[in-house]
Length: 216
Image (tube, rainbow, N blue to C red; front, top):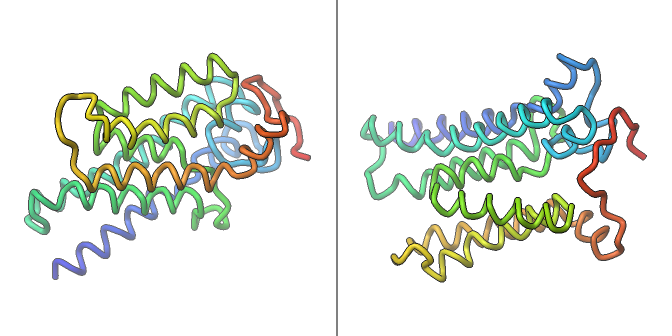
């Protein structure tokens, strides 16, 4: 019975991640498919560039909430005596990553989603809020200094496991969390392959608004 509940919860986590915030928001309030404009990505960054700060902020918060809510499902399973307290962190990671997969390949948007950074941030907030806050600071510093959102995302993702290893909070961190951090970093690198290529060529877009510009 517990196995069935865990499977159902995993599906729920995927469906949460599959909610295409950028696509639905663009269609509902602007009458357009965000994937046909700017970079063609169905994520918060492209929403900021195409639809503006308000729309981008709302989409970003919704995507963060997806990852956070999916990860927190593990706590609900603990309350229901489906898992033990020692398994909460493991299932936070599992459900959070499943939500990220849902964001990348959303069933509600023909499996064409975003890059998952905001959803990853949500699950990071659920698993280690203090380190997530530090990574947000690193992201902002890199973006302000370089004007590249993609570079900020990559550096913040790398900082998460590295700083856990360095034990900056003065305590030994859970090895599972450190492994999860490096998996997150690799996932961010994977979803930003094109961005990395453009960064190396000096062709990456900076943080400027390009409202309603059709993708090339």
